[in-house]
Length: 263
Image 1 (cartoon, rainbow, N blue to C red):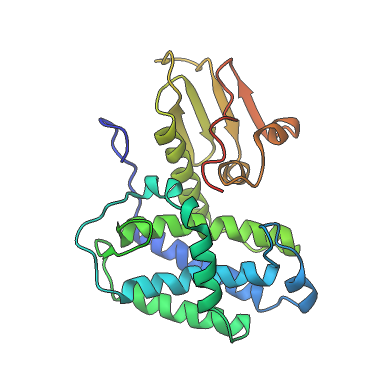
Image 2: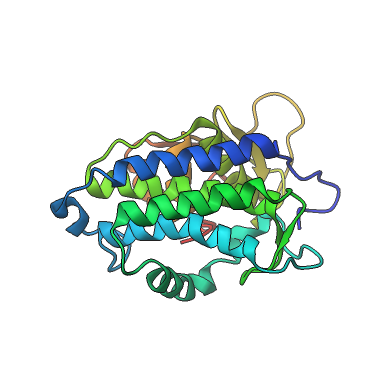
């Protein structure tokens, strides 16, 4: 859970629901236009093709509906900010489940089915519903925040792999950026370094002298997409510095040992 004494960030549940459905709809429309050559390209994620990456995105919505179809759990075990650290051990299981769930139909049909199931499931369930999940039981409201991470990250993956320009919903991008910034602060608590991801997030992290006023002695600043790529292992710290995608000042302003947060 978030460090003792620090109030966890809250998210507007209506905006998050809207962001999740909007981002999924953006991907759904783009996937319907993909041709065989684009679908066969490597995704940049292990051995997945673009088609398999797209199938996984459809599974994100389909599995959310599936989770809401199961009996609810009693008590939430996992907060949204803890989710990035709970996913790595389940990568193989998730990939296999997606493959089994989404075979036997064209991608547009899979997306349409998943969108319909997700929309109906969300309409029927309140945010305090506790889902029984592999990673640990979570409220629907918290789990939906993590869906912004999945959808934003994989939309960016799809754009780069298939040469697309799928829009990224601003609210989804904001929630994704904030959740991953808060996860960094949870992983390395402290106040020696200020990490800025304008216009969405500012967090302090890493043990050491804490500043109280003026410009902090250790500052890291980058844009949202670069931050998300760093946090998920799509971009390496050294490469981001070399390409001037990150500005880091101060002797403690080196996040290389802390990144990626999830991969």
